[in-house]
Length: 84
Figure 1 (cartoon, rainbow, N blue to C red):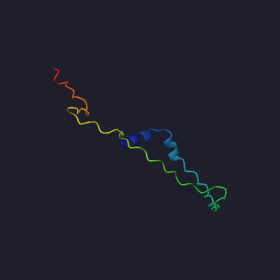
Figure 2: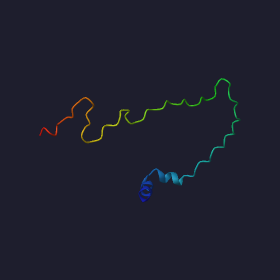
Figure 3: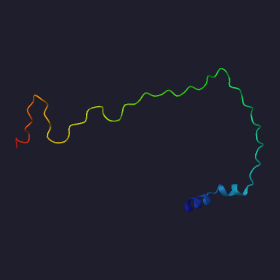
């Protein structure tokens, strides 16, 4: 607050404007009569519904739980730990 007030008071263009009396406001314009809708312009169309977006998650199945991998049927389990 204080910084804004200080910077605003230091601006040279604001001081003469404050001393000048405001110009008289122009007379208000008469309200325009409501124009009937032209038959050429069709009514605004409703917004086109967008197709449902796919979820952000990958459609792939969840990865197997962390631990010893379960070998698919027909294969022997990998003996990587036993090789050491």
